[in-house]
Image 1: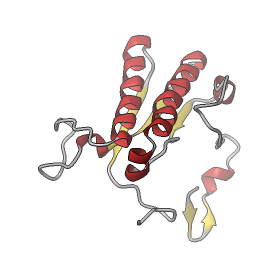
Image 2: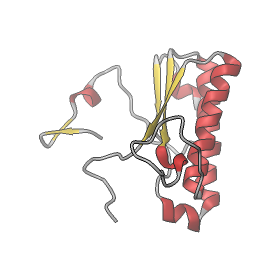
Image 3: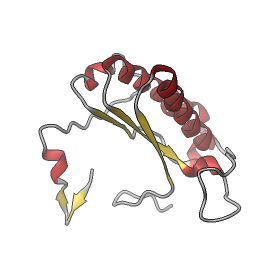
Image 4: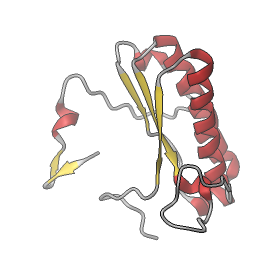
Length: 149
């Protein structure tokens, strides 16, 4: 949820914006949530490194299988664009800063691997089925619920 001066972000109150909270790895018929949508922002992911090392199966299920289910559902309903939240963790520990998109992929832990696999699924469907998409490799996401541990 976004906040502006301790108030709920106005975009969430719009009639044409719908935020859905479900377990994408378990949900069936995700396409029912996307019917009539122009855009789908796929932000669902487990996103911490240490827990991904302790429980890689959980991360694979959510970040890979869940993403595959989202992409399959998007393919059914033919939206204008899928926006995927990828991760800069795919670069491992960069040898130089700033990191370029052309830098070597270096998957150091299950979180990085699963987010990169999700991105590859999105990009594969884009080319194979002509599905419009964009994938953002976020570096650091900052906000009120930022985990600083």
